Length: 285
Image (cartoon, rainbow, N blue to C red; front, side, top):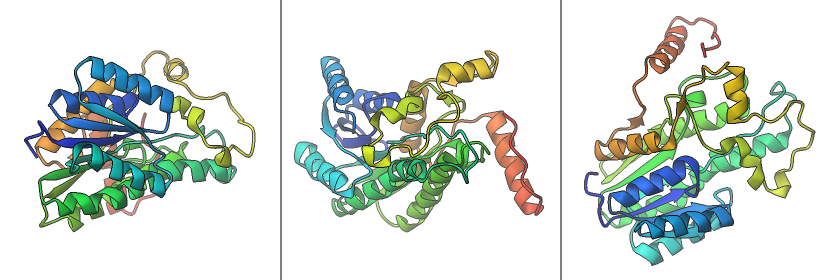
């Protein structure tokens, strides 16, 4: 999909972080963008700033964990800008995984999977039929992660599980869209830790998924990660991820994955372990 000007995009989790960068980049290409986010104040601020810069954007409060909310988003998006050409299922959260997986509260699992996995499923079910029906070129991008989607970090079982599922789901989608004008991509933001506010995602955690037990460790932040790595932590900015996404859409790439020797070595080691029927080893950080 090479011509984007005048087309319509929907980006979930679009008010901040990677989502905000994607919205900004697509708008610069002349797209009309619906920004969906669960956080109303942040959404209002993002819309105001982007409109002031000349972007054609509309904000819609939506909770991707609720299918009826995503259905309403799809209806309002079409009413606002017409047929949807690009869908970015980007909304995501991360629980503070501070104990072994068998001790993690079920509410952490339910909240994370509701957003990271069910949010993608809801987006596909609500939008893809209409995107196929209008018969024009289109693209679906689902945000996964190198953690789970490519390798498995042993200290984030919930997040890794959710992103592994997104990768598998998107690969199936790619095959099932064969012969249509719709393409699918899986986005692996990186190649380093991305500077977003996912570490404070609990600010939008619903009461029905309130944590059942107190945190055993202080919450992880980008600053604490830097300290943990002794200042050696490399950071990727959201704007770089948005550039990767744009290039992936334009080139019809399934894997939107920046080239990186460390990433490639980790993926290669994991696949070689599978082929050798060798027990998995923790990836090098």
